[in-house]
Length: 256
Image 1: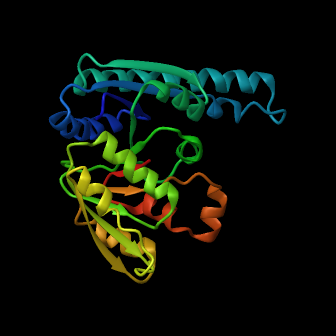
Image 2: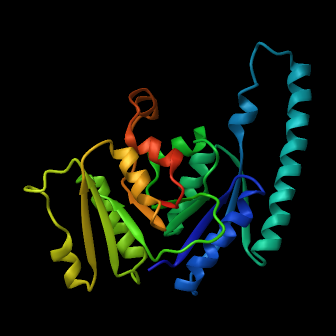
Image 3: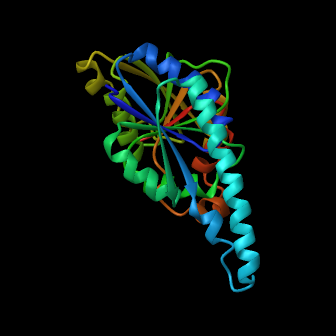
């Protein structure tokens, strides 16, 4: 069961999107606590602290950057006050992934909005996170009635599914898609789930995993997939399926 949720905001535009998603969660778990986090990322400052620039230029740049950050912070504060009245909003200054990892120690789940592209901060976070994450694309409404599990038989995928079971204990039935799976050696999860009063309906396909999962997921409310704790440079060069799904999925993705 979900007790505490941390929402990471990166811009004021995230706030109404995440408000709609959190509203759907609150209907399921009305007693859960929700806090917000905004990180003013030092990478953006230090990237320009180079011997290529004069001290005067650097000081002018830093002053301009501080003005931009203060405006952005105030926009987020105003949006949070409008959409999440009474929420505790924590503001931190530093390296985004380090701060998020530290803050997640006392939460069950991190929720963040999907951007138009996978940022460096998100890629770094996805390689080191130790608690589940939900990445939320912009939609008019959200639900968790129909959940799809991308079961590739990896241990990390199995762990993600069982993390989801623990947090979203009120969900009783699931669909699973297995791509290029040997059915004769496949381990069905139903014997375990039946004892917990739950069930999973498997569907098997052959072909390109990313294309099939993205197509199949359009009929669902949420996708469960394993983590991506390895080099994103390798993902990009090799065109790995997990990265493509993260970039193109139109529903929330739960990464355990």
